[in-house]
Length: 378
Image (cartoon, rainbow, N blue to C red; front, side, top):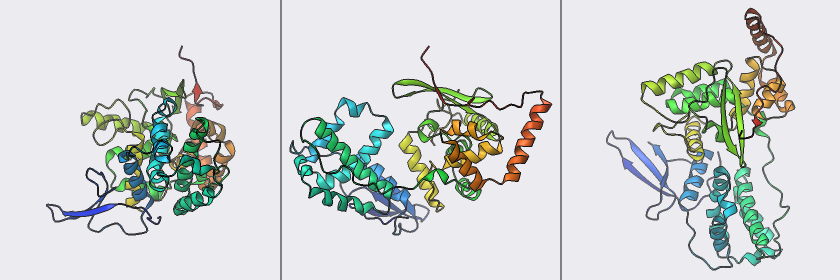
């Protein structure tokens, strides 16, 4: 939970046909401002949950349009930066990261001259502004980082010779690689989740894929023993390989059956409630909202730690797991030590060896077999 020191939210309520009182939250009182949150029966209490604040920031960023301002001001710098070829070429998630912070920067510094940030006294003002998000360090660092990004652009354009925000220490220091969704969290999330969100948490906990990869798994990526597809990253072609081990096969087959029976023809394996491919931000907002409903403060990224335990129980060794999830072997070992019972792991490995022996297969593990690899276009 976080303190909701956010401005301009407009709340109103309506009584539904079944008698339920529903509370609606808009990013502003202004005409056309979008609704970003609803809650039945009672309004949200403070301190506001992280999902509420996250949904507000995303909706506000999408709706925000800075008015035309004086050329030498921060407001005008925000507009010009977004029109540059370099900004337009950024990955969608990266652009969204910056655009979520622009409204708060505009609100606080929009009318200030760019040159004001060459003055040492501005450093204290910026730190005071940043500290209003101290209880959510990631958000605080996003705000400061985006302002630095803006000013670096101004320096590169020769509009200022430098700025005083360099080397301000970031607030977020925690390493979430050791956090996982445990069985109780997953069961609570899935207890009343719609099918399209159940698919997400199942695939995420069994593959360790990042959000950007989850939303782009093609419907035809299933190659029987593994998922395989090519994705465009940093201007190059990359092949993603994910082994289908343990319960993952049953989950993928169940998704296919459900989609077939319900006439869903999504081009991606995972899809939203309308049968369309997810957007990264859309998935995050839906996922956060449902997790918050059950008081789960863990993030979608934390599902990657859960995937480590899934792969270990399936009999993969630590090197193979590290290759799949893109972690250091030491991080994999720490997750395993913290969350997995040694006897259960040994039993799973013995079952794997016996199965391979019966099938007359070589039991020697293929280290790096599933490593994500960059390939040429030919």
